[in-house]
Image 1 (tube, rainbow, N blue to C red):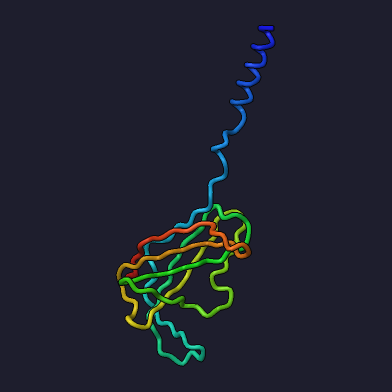
Image 2: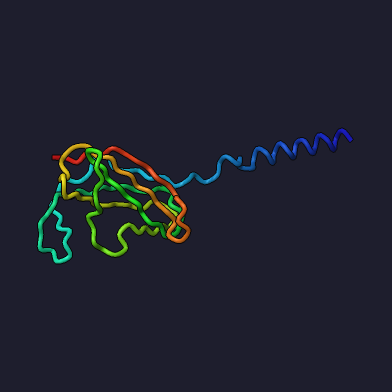
Length: 147
């Protein structure tokens, strides 16, 4: 009887040593925003592209460990406590397709009054499931718009 108990204890110890712990689950998705935005460039938001131009900037980031699927990027930039508008007119802007690895994300922003200017701004990127709307990951960072 003692021999069986010892054998069972030995087998249990081997199984525990080999089996991965529950804490070793796959890490969740994570967004990293670059600390520096692009230099300001002229952007014409009119449909006819007849002007006027406003200063715009682009912010880059990447999402790591992004599960395979389609996601919508919700992006915002606030400078001097005031919001901005996306500097894009393309359909599908903010749509991200992930394959389970790392994907680049980017968004451009402009504002008409007061104008964007070199200096600090707060950027927020959020990824939402395109079909269910649930938030996959989100992050906020202070970025610098160069002179």
